[in-house]
Amino acid sequence: MRRNSSAVIDAQADAVYFYLPLVPHIGHGESVENVVTQRPGDPAAQRPSDPATQRPSGAIALDIDAHGRLLGIEVVGARSLLRESTIEGLKPLN
Image (tube, rainbow, N blue to C red; front, side, top):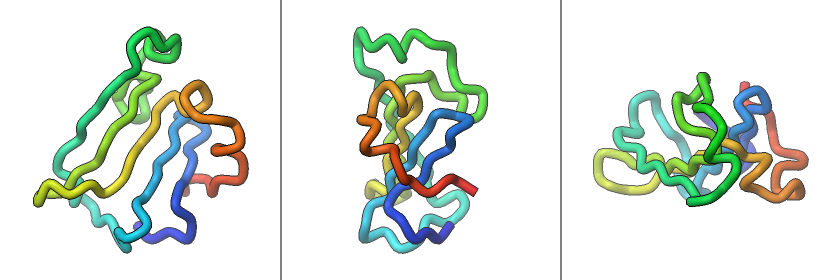
């Protein structure tokens, strides 16, 4: 997946994916581990899981490669966890 911006938004899933600036390309299957966390007490965490990602709403997932290096960060329930100014103008996920 190549991209021109450092983040993309999937409005339907209410998810934002942040790419690390020095990771030029994330190939299919390159992310072999996901570390998922939720903020305790966050109202977004009480919503049902997002069917598109199979992650709970209000979750933050770290994508990690086979060498233990961080590739990117996915925020599910983005509208409740991120500032609107962060979300505005993001490139839609194709």
